[in-house]
Amino acid sequence: MTLAEKILAAHSGKDSVSPGEFINVKADLVLSNDITAPIAIKEFNRLGVETVFDPSKIVMVPDHFCPNKDIQSAEQAKMMRDFARKHKLIYFEVGEMGIEHVLLPEKGLVLPGDTVVGADSHTCTYGALGAFATGMGSTDIAIAMATGEIWMKVPPTIKFVFHGKPGKWVGGKDFILYIIGDIGVDGALYSAMEFHGEAIDALPMDGRFTMSNMAIEAGGKAGLFHVDATTRKYLKGRAKRKYTEYFSDPDAAYARVIEYDAAKIEPQVAFPHLPSNTRPISQVGNIPIDQVVIGSCTNGRIDDLRLAARILKGKKVDKRLRTIIIPGSQRVYLDAMKEGLIKSFIEAGAVVSTPTCGPCLGGYMGILAAGEKCVSTTNRNFVGRMGHVKSEIYLANPAVAAASAILGRIASPEEIA
Amino acid sequence: MARKGKVFKYGSNIDTDAIIPARYLNLWEPADLAQHCMEDLDAEFISRVEPGDIIVGELNFGCGSSREHAPVAIKASGISCVIGKSFARIFFRNAINIGLPLLECEEAVDNIKAGDIVEVDLATGKITNLSTGKSFISKPYPDFMMEIVNAGGLVEHTKKKISGAK
Image 1 (spheres, rainbow over the protein chains, first blue to last red):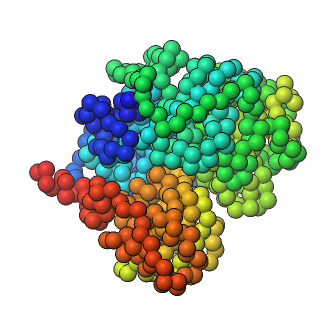
Image 2 (tube, each protein chain N blue to C red; image 1 turned 180 degrees about the horizontal axis):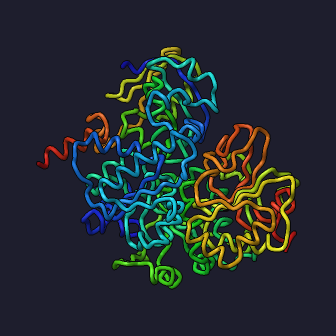
Image 3 (cartoon, rainbow over the protein chains, first blue to last red; image 1 turned 135 degrees about the vertical axis):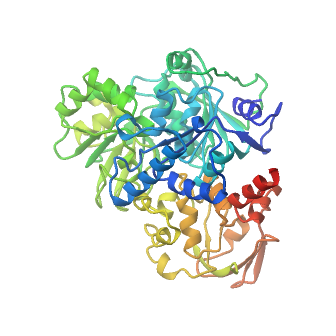
């Protein structure tokens, strides 16, 4: 069995499972946020049950439109907060919050071998820890909150192998954009993605989160890494319960095996309006921009901010554009302050915001006007995603975003450093 | 409601931001969401849609976010079902869970134009293009999913399970 199959078998009371099989899966963690929880709560209330299955396994995070951006968002956040308090769920108020997919691993709430279901498509982020984590809708989450179980179809697994050593400015964001550019936005539809190879072994934890995070952008159900020394080091001091490490069998059956040479991959830029419209940075051409966003559940972790600061420190961003930097959690914010990164950002002319999903989904804190172009470290560049339908989003890694902020056009970090 | 009406035809990778832009996710009442369904992609959709009408997409319909608001908005707009060559995974779950039928049928998609009048029989999976007289059979749902559809959605299906267990 593959890693995904082993975790799913263990959580459905079976010795083995195979792709296509429908199973009932026990959830170790059930997640929702301020925009998906209200519908989940409404559906939960229709079920006619009094209590949740286990309040210590249900997390609600106000991150999308919080701190509340308008009256309606405030009402939604309040509905979630009231429900979380009533049922004594795990809940993080704005002062201790973060973007859910940055926050939960940081707090040690997700561990290897877990199954996590979340009413947010980027729940797949936790695959980086060797957990089976997948996004669902609010009704699914209502059922999971009530019963602790949810139906799933066992996905086939596609194995991705990155051989070799990548270049200086190439990381997890570039690997995953490269995959999506290769297989398309539905290339891994309904499938689990499993990442292997020397370049993957050498990838720091934050780069792994970035890769798993964007599995959904290839249509994937999950994006999984095996536990290794890097994972165990990350978990030290965070994990407060025992966990199980699962490993794919040597004879596991994969739907496909796709191999890449990491050394040949340049920093990637996904052009409007699909994450699969990728080009290597050398082929981008001269594209002036109006805004840069560095942050999100994809690239809002400390390594991402360190990378951006390496480029921005002692420099000035182009006066014609807005540079918005959003640490992914209060912890990341604090660490970035201690390390002097925030000072570098502000001195460079960037604005630094409290953690929020905000601009990534066109919520607030950086909405684009008609005709504007933005380089963003976020995950989607669909039409109108960050504002006006006639605005454009170019997805890239934090180093490319920072270099672009300085030069006022999409730029390679090589041009600065 | 009869699953019969005129067709709105769209392309591949119709994402959830196109179906219901995130700026409206501070709403959650179905009727409110329906007011903004498809507005960035097809500004006339809401003024033209009538109960029973059908959306036909190509590949990977509903990709992107997990927002259940997307199928809810489509259903509340009066659309009776969506026909596509393939559907994004989370959108598919959400639609089944809330009782918006989805039909997978490549041949039908290739043989239906915008404005055609189409009728769908969910029990048999038969899709008939009344404008051309051609009919097609969609991919059947697995038994497990048919149980959810027949129960009227996942909440009703689970309610039955809970009351059965008591």
